[in-house]
Length: 521
Image (cartoon, rainbow, N blue to C red; front, top):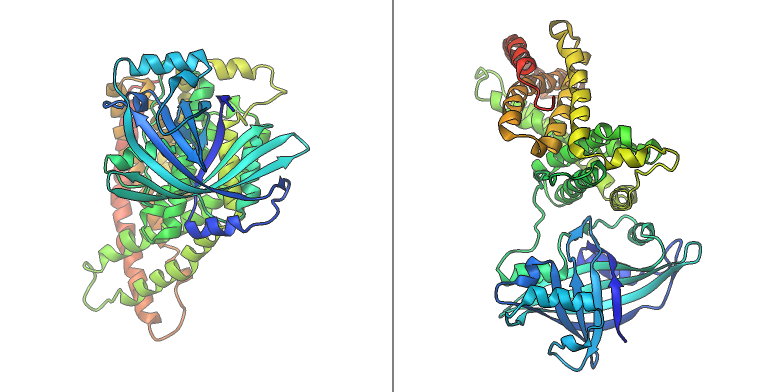
């Protein structure tokens, strides 16, 4: 039986033990689940010597299931937020070899012919997977989803690479159903949004590239195409934020790398800054729950990150500067114990929760399903369609006005107001990073350079304000209490002196930032 049309799939990576638990799962809340069926799938992927199909985002394979072979062409194989929306043409063939004569869709045949040209096609790699499938249905909206749990290996040359993946393909019903089914199925089981299709994984393995590792994920540069509309720009920025948040959640769960909570908090801050920058064109009702959840996760990630900074950047460097009569051992031991036993555990437990799983899937659904649309806002369509360059000019001007409000009173700012100015500058910087590609680099760089110097001062002031709270967290009594409090006194005194020295430069840095031409005007 032939099949042609657009395939909508949600692809998630799981720990093998978690997948075994899902295979044994019974009912799925909100859905009727059919009987599980397990089969072995052998898939052989083809391309030209120069990988013309891969470059055109096309995958071409034949797959053996039992005694039957099926040839599949997928056009548009990129994966965003775990979501794949390729055009798929699937037809039975007689064996392992390709047969383009069976393809019924003339557009697919033409696309293949134009891409391949006179080049030869050959086998590149194969996958051998054990697939357990179930059909999920929901009467209320006609949703029908094929749930597939894949476990097996990618084979290329004499090597193999394991792969464990959950695929959920929407057969009918609204796209939102994919994410709702994933929430109901996964509960509190952590997952990774698959960054690649199986075809792209195969290419990467054949080239000797390692599988995705659990290492700190930094914000990738946002590259907005010339002439892109405001809505698509917002979607691309959300995708960047979602990737950074989801990847660094796994880093925090898998290791004690201090960069994990740091990049997680940055991802959440970038997300919330994007919400605020684009707020004039968004539906506030759908925005609030996501923003509130992001704020809650950021607070827990921030508590761990603050302790990392306190230990590694505020206290530890002074151990070598302190008089010999002062010992920092007891203070550092106390801080590290607090970080490991309490703060990190609180964050990790939260990141393993069904609540955080739901947030990530809700954010993905919001991003890919245009969750910002407001049916009562009749002007929204025009606002979302405007060129993002026009929107960026206004958004950056609004944010700069907020920074300017504090900068005009720089010397008179209270500690709380300094903190607010610091946050306003951070939002300004994230906005410039989002929209910077729309402006000449030689115009953006001078402004960013000057503002960063000012941000460094405010960041240090914030870190020292955090150190000033140390006496409240240290044990009031005990054999080491005296040594701890002496070390705390030295830390606070030394850094307050440094603060006074640095703050004298703040006016100069602020004047330089204010006088630098505003590239968005």
